[in-house]
Structures are given as structure tokens and as C-alpha cells.
Length: 347
View 1: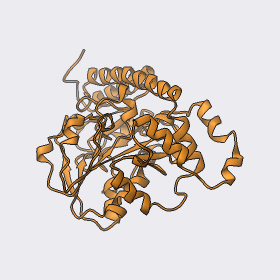
View 2: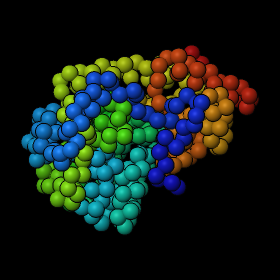
View 3: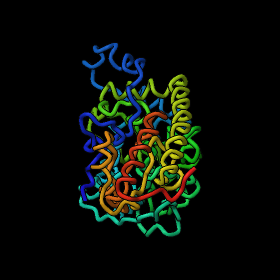
């Protein structure tokens, strides 16, 4: 299984891209803020303003915060600096955390949540001194209760929560950052998805200051670029947060339309997604991937088999506008009809 496979590898020229779940294009005001003063790039990066902005947003002291060059860099820091002996990764989820742990020579235990809802039962998570979980989770879209995630903590365990998609949840309900106690916890955030700037590599960690200090000590000097630090500042102003909130509400509406369209042609999505993408089983058409057939209809979707716990009969599709969702549903209906399969539900 290729844990380093990502959605951009599933795109192709001429296809409607539903494989990458980045909101794009980036707002013009953001691009202007990052490029209007190139003279700043001649100075070594200074993270203090970004740390202050992030601390203010989340209501924590600055030493609870560490800017990083994207979420993937945070997972590498966790693996290399904390050196857990019994790490557990809750799957299906973003595979970079497991890749980072494996690259560091650490034995990973996989805890796979059951389909189709992929709900977390904290009591069933295996013993381990570090647990990694996404919330809401990529690729399932599941939003776990914050109380359930907090209950994973133990005196001898660190809990790492990947909240890269939490800003797509209106009000960021169920974020563990909404609580006062971050003891034993690290939360990883990213600007990539909401703000459409994956090439900038802007992310951050918020959490237990003792653990953040360990990560900061391991982090290389000037590890986060000036444009990334600038992005962390301008994307956390009240105006930017209001725009993100509006985008999250629009995504909710667009996702509801997509889920309805897919269900009406016999392809109901897994669980109750709260993300800018949905996970869809295509088992009714067999165990082989439906991706080649969707490509012939003009769509690129994210394959499922590179996520532990899923197989080729799953695909992830990004939430787009109503016209695109309708066209995807029509393509799936045509594929099912050609295969002699008919919807089990309608509405």
C-alpha cells in the first residue's frame, strides 16, 4: 500500500478534478498580502507575529503554538522528536502520520474504524503511548465528538489530532481547541484546504506547551518560510475568519446537494460527512475501482485503496457546485445502467 499517494496523483488533464479537496482559487486579497512586499523575503523568517496571531485566535499563550511548513511537517516532528514506542493510528485517515512514524523506524499499530459510519469508540482503541486521529477525518468526513477524543488521553499517552479540515465545520464544533485543558494533546492545523495555498506550506501545532517545546527544539532553524508565516497572520484576522465561516456554511449546503444527488442514483455516501468531500462505496458495481469508468465520463476522483481500511471499491469526491454534483450523479447512473445495476433507493 502506497501511503504517500495523494489526490493530486489521481487528476489528469481534461478531467473535472474531484480528487483534490482544496478550495480554490485562493482569494485575491490573500495572494496580494503574501506578495505585495517581496523585500520581506530578504530577511530571515521570524515566527513571533504568527505565533501571537494564532495564540489570539485560539485563546492560548504563544508558547502553546508552533508554526510549521504544512501539516505533514508537523507529523514528522512528532515522530522524530517524541519517539513513541507504541504509536497507534486510527484509520481510515490521512496517511502522512503513519508514513512519518514508519520513516522514523517506529512500529505502528493500526486501529481501523468500522464502515460505513467509521465512528470512534474510545474504549476499543488499543493501548499505545501515542494515538493519532483525524477530526473531521480524511477521507471519511466523520466528525468525532471532542469529548470522545479527549477521553483517549492517559497519563502515559499523547493524543495527536489532525484538524486540517476543522475550519470547514461551521463554528468548529467538536474541536478540542474549544476546551481549556490541552494536557497531553497536540492539535495539527493547516491553511491548505480552506485557503487554497498548498504550495505555500503553511500550518501550525497547538497543544500542551511541554510537548510543543519538544517539537520546537527539534524543528530546524527558519523551518517555516516568511510567506507561510504571513499567511498564518492574515488568515486569522477577524475578517478572514468570517470569510472562512461563510465558506464553511456554503460547503454544508453544497455537500447536502451532492449527498442527495448521489443517494438518488443509488450511491449513498458513507456516514454523515462534515468535510468538503464525501466518501462513496461503489461495491454494488463490484470490487474493482470505478475510477476508470468515471474518467471516461470526464471525472477524476480520489482512489480509496491507499487508505488503510478501504479498498478499490471506495472513492472520495470533492464537494463542488450543484451543477458539478448533478453531472457526477448522472455519470454514476449511466455507469450503473451500463453495468446492469439499478439504484436500490430513489427520491
